[in-house]
Image (cartoon, rainbow, N blue to C red; front, side, top):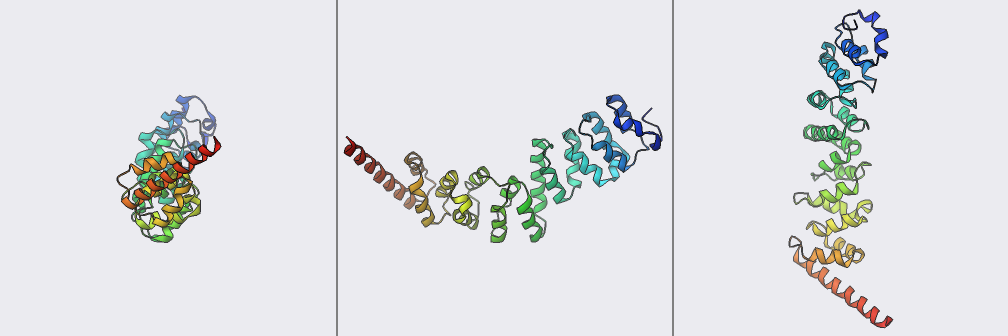
Length: 255
């Protein structure tokens, strides 16, 4: 019955919980954009119903229905992923910021954002750097634009894990490495310091300032990394020997 009733008589079916009735309602050709959006406000809709809503003729014409489908927590991936190419960049950012959206869908959305970001004006890219997810922000770091780099490093969603992972990339521009090394928020993090010492673009003076705060065991491991500049490895080896000898002298005195 719900499949063919006139729109004004379909009201009572919007509160239905029986899947078969909801499926019939989703197939009703008389529904308009507001009706589909109203249904999509329900977070308890079965995936089958969401699939039918996506096939509705009004969904094909409505940008807002497409967006609501992608942001719905129970929309099947086969439905939501093809819609992504129709969405505007900052609506995709909203999708990433919607807690109920499945993690695997968010990952695809983030990659879609990064592809779109290659073609946007600089001002929009800086806004995206401030508002995007941590993964998106890290993905934008491959740039020489210092204002953009600073905006990324200030992004509230960027985590130590993102920075630690990105600092290991050989193709990361020197400007990015130098700004991370001189930004207090990041350069004081232990794992970030380890990554910075390994990166050949880190200013030597900053490397020297990090070494005293690192464990000898980690410094020994750094000495084995052949990718590091030889002067840095020699300095670390000498520093380790000095600390080990100092520790041994302290033990001897204590005895």
